[in-house]
Image (cartoon, helix red, strand yellow):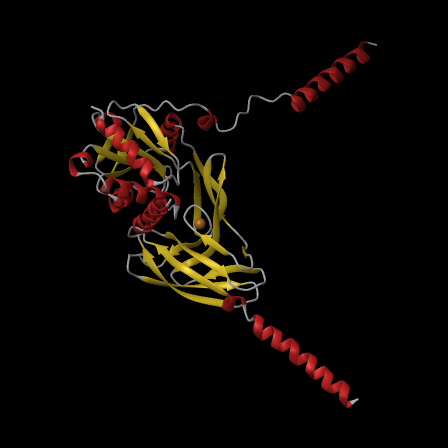
Length: 198
Length: 164
Ligand SMILES: [Cu+2]
């Protein structure tokens, strides 16, 4: 009798564990960094010439992009567009703009490589990165996201990533973002608007 | 008996004739404004873009692309996944009869992986399109900076607006 009670308790416990295992799911939200409204904020990352603090650029308009140098299409399109727009600015305005290319692939993108990459598109574009955690934290603040693509091939991996350009005003606040593929005129207009503010 | 033979030959002749008129996929396709994107020195990847028009009355299929400029040449596309641009290989690109399919930035492209040379504006790269019937079309493709392409595009859009 004593024994059958024990077996009963064990069976009951087993059922409880099974049910919990089947139906209880901890909160698994996907990509919260995209869902929340991004607030922006200060950060420090590394460049080939030393640390780069967003704070250094107070008084300037900053354009942020998250990408990686081995990106064959999306990143060069956005950087090409940014350089095109920067070339449309008169010199005194150009001096008040800083472009930052933040690599989401620090595993392969060395600081030297990032330097070359930024400069290739425009002298006002600087390539920066950090540890994967640091870059992920900055991406989260700005509403960007990235991950290693599942599709691997003989020549290495590619990265999935958001491809918006983020505009930061002279006070260091995130002002707006321009989606990938938007016409250059949209970026130029926003830049002009931010530059005209004091 | 003899008449039957003539008839068979006539039929065969018709069939060969039809095939000759239809030609290969490579002959039925024309390529519009191809270019490969210039990249910073040392860059291992790039992409080729173009408009491909199927001038025939049959649907055709682009199966592959080849080129000695890179270790690996593939047909690729981009899709939006969870708000992120994601690139992947495609097994084929359908070319509907009488239509132009655009390989363009942000979408379909000829992916070049493991570049064997730097791609500088003004260079030419040879690429080969391979169709499902096995026919091939060889192209001499200029290397261009993306900025130049965009300027052209912006100007086109501008012109369109002016006409309205
Ligand atoms: Cu690709």
